[in-house]
Every structure is written in structure tokens, then in C-alpha cells.
Length: 137
Image (cartoon, rainbow, N blue to C red; front, side, top):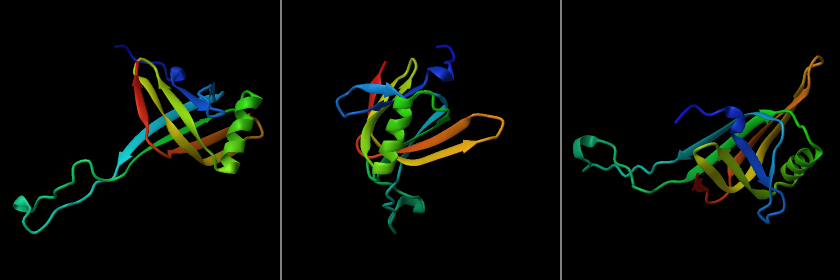
């Protein structure tokens, strides 16, 4: 497999909950992180006093972040409306030649910035709000 172009990694939003996904335009950077909390079950009888963990225990979560410039009114308006209402929607993160990560997310941060000699930029952060699926390519 050859290296993949970062521009092919897309963030898409299900605008209405009906499965029609809209690409969030203007993103220049995107990232995805998975985390799982461990459950420590170590006790006085643990072999050699080594930590023991409960298999399958703990809470799993996914975080998506992105930064860029808004390029169309539709995705700009939809992202702002979802943030201010606290609405949870399905999102997709397309990972080229790997697959699609899809599930319910909430926008937990939305930031705007601008330099007097440049364009207005934005950053957003999403946190998973339910089960996340992976759809292989």
C-alpha cells in the first residue's frame, strides 16, 4: 500500500438523520482518536503484584477534530446550528483505502479565528455519543 493523501480524508455530516451525508467543506486538517478506559482488578492475590485488567471493561470513546475554512453556506450553517442546539447527529470520517468510521457524535467545541491579512478559520471537535462502526473499504 502506498502513502495516502491527507486531502482524501473527509469528514461528512448526516444533515437530517436520513443517511444523506454532506461533506464539511474547507477542512485542511482532520484527526481521529480512539480511547478506552481500563478497569483495574488487581488485588492482594495478583501474581507478582502485577496489575490485572478486566477484559472488555471500561468506557470506549472516539474523538474527531478538524480545522480549516468554511467554503460553503450549507455546511457552515449546519455545523453552527448543531453546535448551538447540542444536537447529536451521525458523522462519517472517510479514511482512504482503509474504510469509514461512522456513528453518533456531538460537536463539543467550535472556534473561529482570523488574521487581518488572512482568511477566517475554524476548528471543531466532536465526541462520540454512542456506538461507533467501522466499515472496511
